[in-house]
Amino acid sequence: MTRKSKKRALRSHLENPHPLLRIFLVLAGAAMLVAGAGILWAALTPIPDLNSFDSRKVAQSTKIYDRTGKTVLYDLNHDVRRNIVELSEISPNLQQAAIAIEDASFYSHSGVSFTAIARAIIVDIKTRSFAQGGSTITQQVVKNTILSGKKSPIRKFQEWVLAWKLEHKYTK
Image 1: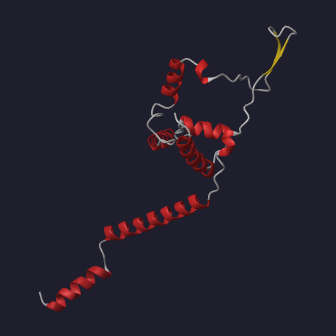
Image 2 (image 1 turned 60 degrees about the vertical axis):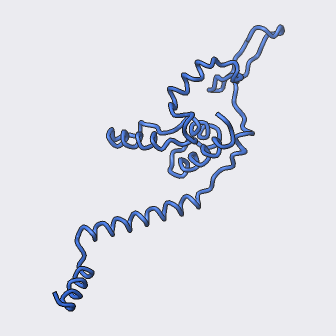
């Protein structure tokens, strides 16, 4: 093969790349565009202050006792029947059972379990519903104490960031 024919063959390959290469380049470009948009979106999303977790108010039932202070006359609960108890008052077996049921990898993740999120997405796609949750216990605490219950991608991202921060602020 002469030098001119080699150049012509190379130019032909550059001008008319293989169809699979074109598809790969288009998909790679699209993936980079989506990733860049995701990074920009994440950088611009406001994250609530974690200090609101420390100063939160927990609604409890209001109890009205008789004059001896021993008999409850009324228990007013405004849709929430809750009494705060110390962690030491809860059986360690009950604590471990709740963790095992709600979040088996509680002690090994940093607030967000991407494995659980992927599993939930796959099940939701297969069942064509949004029935599965991918939230860790930490994410549930953040959602119920700091964020609103409104479902949106922004709230979910805020939940992930705050769960990670909460895990690094407190011990398990």
